Length: 309
Image (tube, rainbow, N blue to C red; front, side):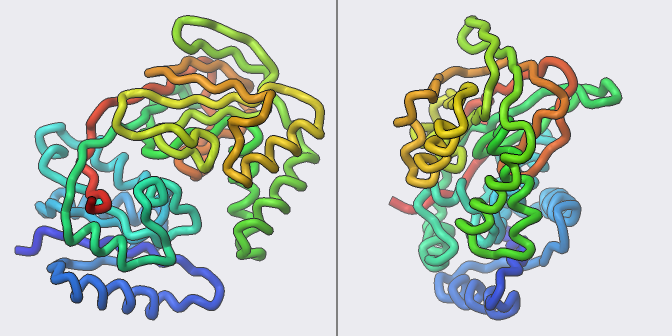
């Protein structure tokens, strides 16, 4: 029985054939003698269903050929099973999504598919941390959602939501981000939040907050998913030109240089924000928590196949 499964999540980019993209991946998998089964997902729900099915069918290496959202679904499926079973399973990534930030942390990219396949062939496995957001929904039900990259709250989460809508028409990454930012400026751009970090509670008007287990789409550039800590970046309310400057530095990868940024490092953060405050988990828009909620980190919970040294 084969122990490796590839879950192929088609990236419907313009001028990119889904079949040709898979053919390229398949040829490289054969080149590096990786014996596998392949299934293709249709949507987010099918990714979760397929990952659960692969776990139940005894696959030991589950490789996501997709982006951050698909990888997030896989991580959440893994966290839903008993630890004794989870410890026997490895997950890996072939970047194939609109957003591939967690793969980028490990030096992997959509453009260099062969590097990702080489990492899978070398099969160097590392235990990595998993972030967790614990909250109550509108019905008062206690919920939790796990993440590998980051949770965004406020302006950037709103931009990510708009970006998914805009990108259906404008496939350029920078253009879709710029148009989303312009659209979001016509909405509320700051939210009154109360948050507790390292036993200190503060209350401020916040433009955006990023809680990162990894790069956080450039907002937590020093975060690493193996130190048992979360990096937290908070942009407090300021004049519009300061917000524009923050966006400019974000695009340049220099967000921490902005004088209005407050960086922290902690194992957990407790937050209370308005219910209309947008939130995204690994780039995927999420329902807004009701009341106080907590984001923390669980150390060395998942086996991840990383780039070979």
